[in-house]
Length: 208
Image (tube, rainbow, N blue to C red):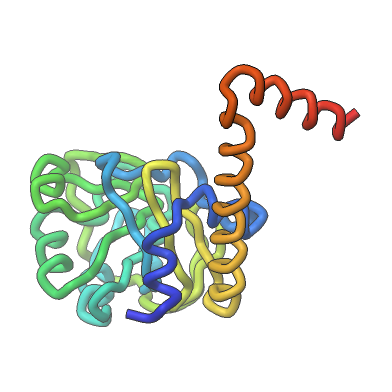
């Protein structure tokens, strides 16, 4: 695991979003299936034909340990991209999680597997297996372009994409933002109500 990957694992998505200017946040309807699910790793991208899921197996086979499958399912909410069996295969070879612009099924079993999935929701219907789909090409998911190898950071607040060429700069900016926020919080709360009022007066004066 690289230093950048370790750093992203300790950063909340809110700080990463602030560091990127919010331009690479996935749509807010792509949510974790459980609040404690977190992701921080490199993308293996998948583009699926509408209602299909055959290329997901190809992507699992191509993935390295710690990778995250990022799947453009065209926003289809009728057919599942994966269920618990496919998820178990991914987990078994070390895939870290899935981010899906679509739906999955077998949610209870996936939660039992404790495998992070971020999706538009769930369905009872299996995906079609008629073929098609591509792996490790640029895709669009949740309103953001994702390239193979880009960094994906996800938690209960959402998912942020960090282009791999910007990763070190974004880590530094996010860490600096957290430090600044800590100083601000200490300043605002050091003397209870008195310091809160002083902080509010300071901010409002600066904005006037």
